[in-house]
Amino acid sequence: MREDAAAIGGEVVGGPDPAAIADELQFLVGALVRQVRAASPSREVTLSQVSILKRLDREGPHAVADLARLDKITHQSVAVSVAGLVDRGLVLRVPDAHDGRRKLLVITDEGKRLLTERQEAGHENLTDAIAGRLSDAERAQLTGALVLLRRLLD
Image 1 (cartoon, helix red, strand yellow):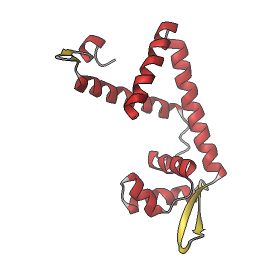
Image 2 (tube, one colour; image 1 turned 45 degrees about the horizontal axis):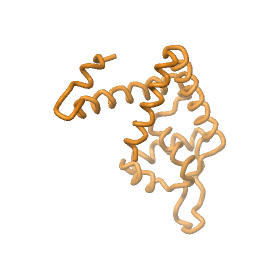
Image 3 (cartoon, one colour; image 1 turned 30 degrees about the vertical axis):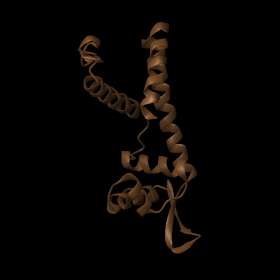
Image 4 (cartoon, helix red, strand yellow; image 1 turned 180 degrees about the horizontal axis):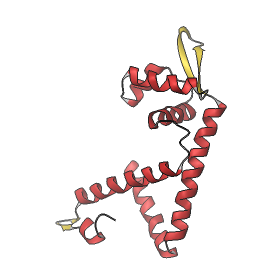
């Protein structure tokens, strides 16, 4: 742990310092995400490619331009990532039924399988860590913290 709890919640007028909490939360969430990713089988897929697969799985077909706009990255970067996904059979290019000039990207069953493998491996690793490292009381505290984290998303 980077700092002890007292330092993170350093008192200021009105309670613990929101900036210190935000800094620690950002650090810990990033570290947790990296740890979960490390437990997942990579199958030589980049994080950008995983992001594309997740979006296609959640939202359905998209054109390369749509993905670039939604993720606020260059068309060229998305096109390079997509080319790798297509080459590996994780994504297909299909004609847009409404505009024959456009190609839409669709996740394949193999792409869905890869996402499932990654999710299950990361979930299992995190479940094992929670079960093995935290007491019942700590798990209850973590559950309460999750409620607060969800409120930050609203």
